[in-house]
Amino acid sequence: MSEQMVAVAGGVIGGALFLIFIGIAIYLLWKTLCLSPAYEELFNSVTPRHSDATINDLTSIQQTSGPHPNNSSRTKSVPFIIPPKFLGQNWVDVKNGERIQEDCEPYVAPEFLPRSSFYSLAGSFAVGSINPDLYKFPEDGSEADFPEGNIGRLWFAVEYEQEAERLLVALVKARNLCFPSESCNPFVKIFLLPDERRYLQSKIKRKTLNPQFDEHFLFQVSSKTLNQRTLKFSVYHVDKLKKHHLLGQVLFPLKNEMPTGESKVVIWRDLEAENLEPPSEYGDVQFSLSYNDYLGRLTVVVLRAKGLQVHEDRGSVYVKVSLMNHNKFIKCKKTAAVLGTTSPVYNETFSFKVDQAELDTASLSLLLLQNMEGDKSHLLGRVVVGPFMYTRGRELEHWNEMLNKPKELVKRWHVLSSSST
Image 1: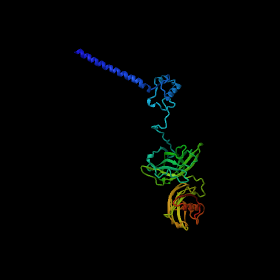
Image 2: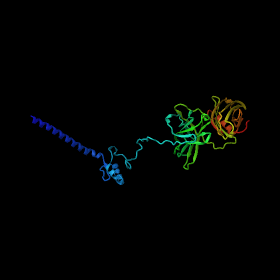
Image 3: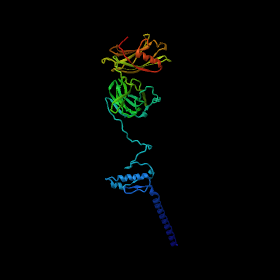
């Protein structure tokens, strides 16, 4: 009985071993027949059996290039294998594991990007790139609505840190720059007037009329003089000979209300062409006029002056705007005084109540005055604009253009005279 049981057990064990042996043999045979064509080992001395053109190209590249003289043993020991998922793709000039990336494939940015250079200029610094998420952009279609004759538009933001007495300027972008061709290489110089000798400069953008800057700049300025300073943005094009050509400029007086809060408000201003005419004998003043016939309101925006014959040992300069009717004084308003410059910037707006029937007899007188010791003022220049009864030339043209373009600001330069009458 025991011998029968041993015989049965031996038969079962033998059958099991036989089945295992058969399974291993079948697996090895399947692996040899089905999996071997899926991978191709490419050695210098072996011609591949795969008929795919891309694999043949790879083989010819390796055969013509040959192994590296210093690493021949390592090249032979590590074969170059094409996995199945890459078969049928266009591999161009494959060497050392590199290939040309297709445009449709995603681009992975490097972890560390180069930062803008940091440099100092007498209390002024370029402090690198800005984070657009920290800024609140105006939703007014300002990138599409350009008036006729527009030569460009500039976006920027300004912030003043009271405790550190630092002025932070964010230069964002420019659009619609006026240049004969697309090969414009724009950049921006930033001045803190009245100092026009020193400035900070943005990076040059190549071949674009719509540059994106996203740069930060820092000026060290006292809070006591902040309201008398003006930011000047000058946009230039640099040609192949590295000559600079002015495309336009923006003046931003810092006495204007500056935004506060966590989100910095981005401001935009249209570029103005440089006035290439030399200053007149007593200087020139620029201002805008507008008349609202519905409200009966006459608006004057005193912008700036240039070439004033100021006395260095005397006080600051201001503008006195007077409304006259039949040469009789009606009302006057004054700008803030600007210290220590022959080209002050004001950007102040004044409004007067004037009925439409009075426009033929009303006039505006602008006096530029410099403070002296005590309560006295020294007259630097004067200009009067109004109807034909009082004015001629540019002053009359300015007045008539204002009447022909109601509710629209009309801006012009005017020559100052020394007459006080």
